[in-house]
Amino acid sequence: MPTVNPTRMELTRQKSKLATATRGHKLLKDKRDELMREFLDLVRENKALREKVEAGLNEANKNFVLARSTMSSEAVEVAFMASKQEVSIDVSTKNVMSVNIPQFDIQARTSDANDIYSYGFAFTSSDLDDAVKSLSELQQDMLKLAEIEKSCQLMAAEIEKTRRRVNALEHVMIPNYQKNIKDISMKLDENERSTQIRLMKVKDMMLEDAHHYSDKMKEPVEN
Image 1 (cartoon, rainbow, N blue to C red):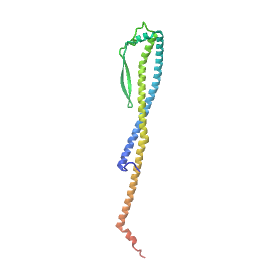
Image 2 (image 1 turned 90 degrees about the vertical axis):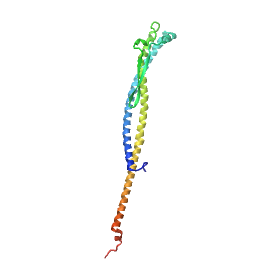
Image 3 (image 1 turned 90 degrees about the horizontal axis):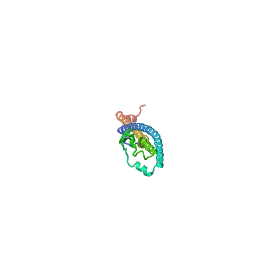
Image 4 (image 1 turned 180 degrees about the vertical axis):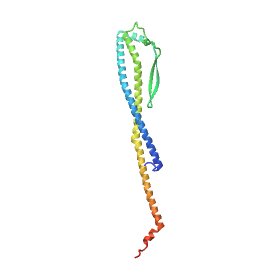
């Protein structure tokens, strides 16, 4: 039995809902596939950039260790006590398939490359200079890595949400609409056949009354 009112108006509504659900299903599948393509590109970029950043951090740490071996802890602390350079980060967003992924842009207070060194060179080790320079060169890559990893998290969440919607349409809503359409069509066909049978019976009764078929059948047959 249909779970909805078996009328032609309801049949039209169910067909309209099925068409809308089918179009939505196709659009969501296309969105999911495009998100997956973008996500995989970001994952590959993230992997390469993370390896680069980790290698740079390891090199910077080695230089810091070498600097600490030739300088006292007090000298290192004094060297970084007063900074000459400041950086700020501008955050914006970019829409990718309805996902607002972050865009980071780093801005330095001054354009002088030597302002990364907050100390004089007379009482510090060259290893410390190399470590500071390595970290300064890694700033942009580290910021880009943070941007990509956050974008991957947001895209992964959107892919999962889109996947659930696609599955709901494909396995629940569309089959329900198809079943309702089939049940309503069968019920309407059954009602139409019943109506035709009733009309045929009424027609027979009207013909019988008009031509007195029953009386003629009772009359004796003459020899």
